[in-house]
Image (cartoon, rainbow, N blue to C red):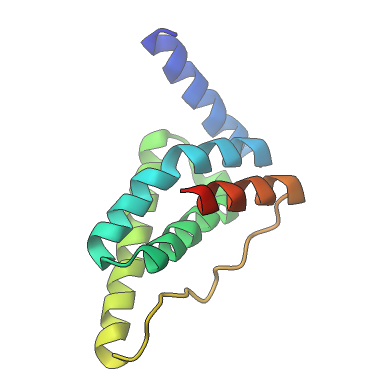
Length: 127
């Protein structure tokens, strides 16, 4: 596959995401999860909380899917969202040192077909 074909394929995934195609979200979830999990884990030094932060950020992406026009916009959104959730958790830990895990208020999965959610949860469990 040439670079041009890869760019066109990514653009098509983003277009389908904007249109609310759940399979496009799943593809992007699989594509971005590891990168943003590593970022969250680096900030938190806690794999379970990093997983929760990453999933919440990606689920927020789906909830706001119609707003994104480019891969650059998606990545900027995800970096800011992951960073902010991590900083919120670090601040919360300072106030509540007995807390052991980050659980964002909105970690519930957004409306997605059951098979897509199952694929996402299996993917995360395998990572």
